[in-house]
Length: 347
Image 1: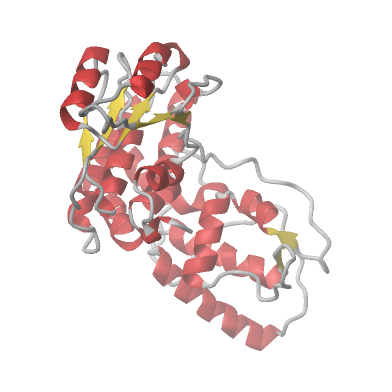
Image 2: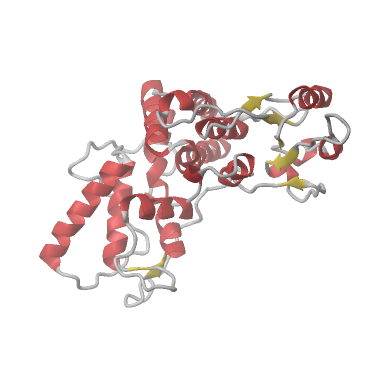
């Protein structure tokens, strides 16, 4: 699993009007992740009005305008479900007045604030506030202002409405990237914002199960163990795994940052886990001998020996192959491997 999701640069140049544009082009043009665009299509019916079976979706000018309106509304703080209803209602009124004739598809859409939503001006010196970051601009702005109540409300409401995985992929991770990149480009400025936002994201993840009425009661059976390799201090990604596993009722034990090898081995022997996820953010800390040892560990009586499945997660493991270990490429894949058969985790 790795922390990706920063949108690609906006593409310039219009596509042929009669053919429309593909979902990939639209996602890049608006700065949305493909996951978010698919989510909006499935949850709120914002997909192309015309879709031929067996062919790639092609978005017309009206389809693009609908998604742009959705971006504008969510950027101003309107919850996604309400934004979708408002955007579709306005699109219906517009089509009744103008008809279905094609309009040019803008190469770089502007983002005027909607008249029917509370408007908040851009923050001077904050992260980019173009349509490329519409879905998390409000959260980044609140973080830059160190507005604890606003940040907590946005994180918690998103988790309640969409669950842990969507909150991580569509809101938390992109905003953390945006704030981190702003800090890197501004010298020593904004480091307090990154620390502030990370703390609130961690708090929201640890509180997620209390926010979710649909969270399952943990079932019986051996747990999943989550740990960072020795020396690794970055825990937010495995905190997201922990929260998502709790949401689907999987027993899980969090062992946290910088766990010594001997302690992890002792925990495996003591708990007999079904799986172990070992996180490494940096290549220099990826502990291959420890991973190999974990794949060979077994316990139990002779003739009934058991082993834990091993998942190596994080960018530190890229390019490293450990026989018998899986390397998930995202939170969703990691949770599906650790808690198979959970319907709510599949798209």
